Image (cartoon, rainbow, N blue to C red):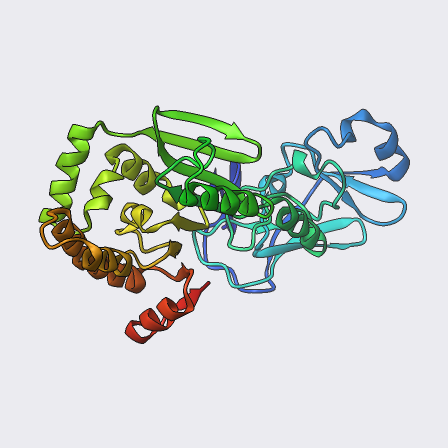
Length: 347
């Protein structure tokens, strides 16, 4: 009984599978073919690297051409985590098991392709944990990883309630603009913000996606909804269902998330799988409470500030529990919140 069967491969086209359990060190199959000289291999266009070739180097003088239907071993696919290897004795080549192989497992070996400028022409589909993505011999795969590490920039999702490129001169817009330009030097940045229209465009190196702000009627509806949920009123003012849906559907594409101001925190409340940073700036609750104390007893707005102060303090504590890092302006406020919850807090 042959130790292999030909079946549809999970790696590429057809492959060879173990028809029984194979012990480490066992011979699996002979790699058969026609012995040719090195000179023949160099002169024959059949062995051009642009085509599928089944050529083994036997020694300094001879190669083995395995591109024949009678050579069943040619169907064994490459893997970055192989269970076989190819060894030669004289002018014969054998495929050996380098680990115990269970019945039904696909045979594979390292094709041993060298690393050169054409390596991208040979993608690897072995799907092993240590796959480098290309058919390159084990000793050269570090070069692929080095190239990938240089080219791959980490992706950051920057969430801000106001478009930093809108031309406004408010403090939060200016701060958002500085942060986004700083991040763009090191990361691939996508900004999600509110603006007058729905739009998606490139601003320098930055991907900018804007969502249309609600009109005043819908903003008031959202404000009352937030109050009912015991959340700050201003979260309702800067809320967009479309923007929240986009973030929830696409957050997995990014390495980490940066929220500029506490108003943006509402968009990532339910996300726990990503590193989340919040640029809180000031403790809004303290500012609102100070404003409450300064307002006249007869001024009805005074009591709106009192309610917002309470709701904001509650929400700030929620954010300190749920974000990995917080930025604050005041060292006094940092100390205050550090006493509440140990967290990575910076100015």
